[in-house]
Amino acid sequence: MKYIAKDTLTAVEMDRGEVIEFELASGDVAKISLVTTDARVLRTTLKELKVPEEAARTDYSFSCILEVNGREHLLEREVSTQRSFYEPWEIDGVRIWFDAVDDIFEFLAEDHGVCRPSKHARFAFQDATKRICPELLHPWCPLPEGGLRIEQCYRGEDCWLGAYEGSQAHGGLDINHPKGTPLWAPLDIHDQYYFNSLAMGHNNNRWRGIHRWPDGSEWILQAHHMTELTVPEHTFISKGSQFASGAGVLSGYIDHSHFIFKVHDYGRVIPLDPWILFWQMYQDF
Ligand SMILES: [Zn+2]
Image (cartoon, helix red, strand yellow):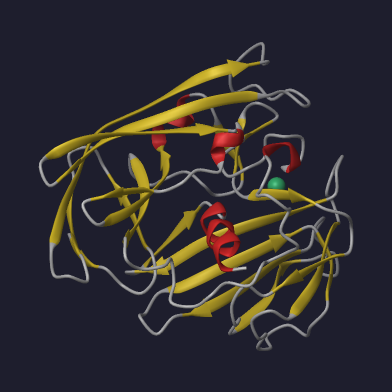
């Protein structure tokens, strides 16, 4: 498949052996193929993998060999160490966010939110001369000074794909903050609503907001555990305005908000690490 770099990130899932072309703004075309993928447990407190234990911890690494224009590159990530908050790669003019490999599900279950790639690996690609999107992002919540800290992701494990209870891939990014912490719109939100709420009889308040880009891509942003939506549902929210009081509902041992990011484009919805948004927010504000 051939992609042409847009003004927003291109989320792509690939199988081993699959080749894609990614055309840059310069007109150069990068040929990218996924050669291998791998994942391994670095350390765990579990007695048995995949069997959840209260406050257990499993840290792991994952990797792939990506061939770009005929040259192989080893990409390696760690979760959920501080290195979960990683810098993207830049190879031959392509900025590469290496989001996930399916191999991690050899030792994790997908029981804590949708996050498993539908192919062997998941990436987001962008022309390295472009931002993740053409607009500055407003902080989604007060940004911790100096960057995100893994210790502040629930019990220190619930970054994107972190091992909740040592055994379940965490389908979101948790940021600890007190009940009532303001949540602001990172971008204009064209539609938004609760898809779960206490009022509807669920055990949690889960909100979804949608931003539609002129390039055809749609970004889906979600926040869970919020105590209150402070705007009426299905109304427009302008970038930077508060729409909710975060944390506080079903937020467990430590009050936190759970953030989700998905890209809807090319007829499919692909979840990505919300860190990518926060990485850009730290650059923008
Ligand atoms: Zn969470």
